[in-house]
Amino acid sequence: MKKLFVMPEKETIEKANRDKQEGKSPSTQAGEFVHEEIDKIRRGEHGARSTKQAIAIGLSEARRAGIKLKPPKAGTVSEKTRKSAEYATQAAKEHKPISRKRSMARRKALKKESTQVASHSALSKQTRQAAKKRSAANRSASAKKAARTRATH
Image (cartoon, rainbow, N blue to C red; front, side):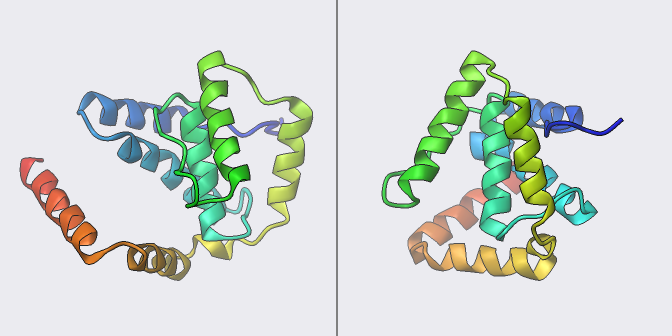
């Protein structure tokens, strides 16, 4: 039987719930969904236009699964993306399923896209670009927080 719509795997939801119980941040919980999305692209289930899009799909799935992620701040992304994030959050609260037509259209469109966006080099490039936009103090604080997290676990 052909898979009709995209849903997060049960394992991913369980991992995100485990992260929540451990008191980890919503962005860490959502990371499980982004990781799953990258794996789907690598397996060739579908593709994406860019690494950013692959990450955005993962975050959208996380919001729909009930992860309490805030929508991006105004000015950081397009208004369309902000609205989409708000819609996904609202859909999670209402447990609103995606229509079959829309789901199939999304899957068909993603099937045509490249799988290179999930390569190690593409992800590395995206990470470096994102880090460059942050201030030195912000990066330093993030690294210190990561070190504290590693020490406690």
